[in-house]
Amino acid sequence: MARLIVTNGDSAAANIRSGGVSGRVLEWRDVLHDGPVPGLESLELVSDVRADYLATVFGLDFADVRGDFAARDGLITAHIAYSDVELWFEHDLFDQLQLVQLLAFFAREPERVGLKLMQADTYLGALSPEAAAALAPGAVPITTLQLEAGRAAWAAVTADTPEGIAALAEAPVPDMPFLAPALRRWLEELPAPESGLSLTQERVLRALSEGPAMVGRLFGAVTEQDEAKFLGDLSFFLRLDEMAFGPQPLLTGLPCPVHEVPRFKLAIAGEVPTAEELSYRSYAASTVTLTPAGTAALAGTLDHATLNAIDRWQGGTHLKPGHIWRFDRQAGQLVAPG
Image 1 (tube, rainbow, N blue to C red):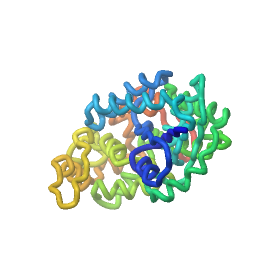
Image 2 (image 1 turned 120 degrees about the vertical axis):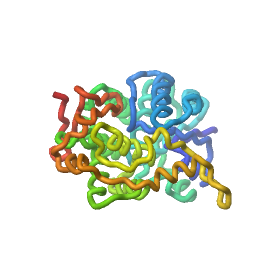
Image 3 (image 1 turned 180 degrees about the vertical axis):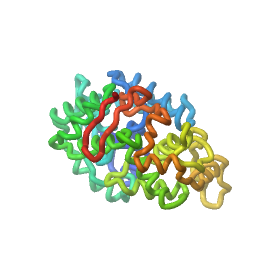
Image 4 (image 1 turned 90 degrees about the vertical axis):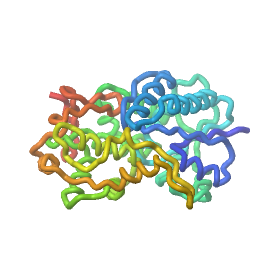
């Protein structure tokens, strides 16, 4: 009988295929920790919002992004054509948000056949094909409790305040050991009470306080500090953007905003790099420097979120002037706008 395996993205899917695991492999491919995630029951309507966001901030073609989502959504909507549907996801925030979206989708479906979950405490895209294939026996039937946990988590993710996320971050779910830690890490991307910096932004500025750094090396140094790494390069660049192009820049040296850095395919060895690849390399090789405002933010004497009037979404929560939810990382508590 036919099997459908849903996983996070291209690298993981390639390893699963190369490992000889039977079945069709579907890449979910959405950076749900960045940008608006609306509380709509229709997968297609959510994908409309997500495609518009991703195309805008990353400088992608909307039709291409929306077309990819349409193909993805069409395949998952036809899940009943498969005797087994397996969700293969990792422990990090990137994967856990995709997982709860899928669990919430299946919780609404009137008919489900052979639904299973494989939870990995390692990075599927970094495994050898053989190691990826060895995980196949770990796919076990999804329980009603897991479906309901996914539904509740998705409702919290898409809510217009992060209060539900905070509650779930303190309430571990049986048989879903990675969800609460991932949600706690997401809360840490909210602005801090005094500095207005997310945890990633604070780590960036702390690294720059030791001297200027190349963007590519900074990406590695900062993301390595996460126990469960979840940020890709472009998501990291977005966080640099917010600090570099506001009224009071906290760092300087970026050549352009991230939406002007085109995605590219690496040239084959011996071939001349494409213009897109050269542009990306130039961005990643640029050197950024801490500004006096950045030093003040690190010290907690300048509120980046207020002075630079941040305007970004975290799930269903719109962080904007007058509506800035914060997270006190020392106390482990949400701070409501006020």
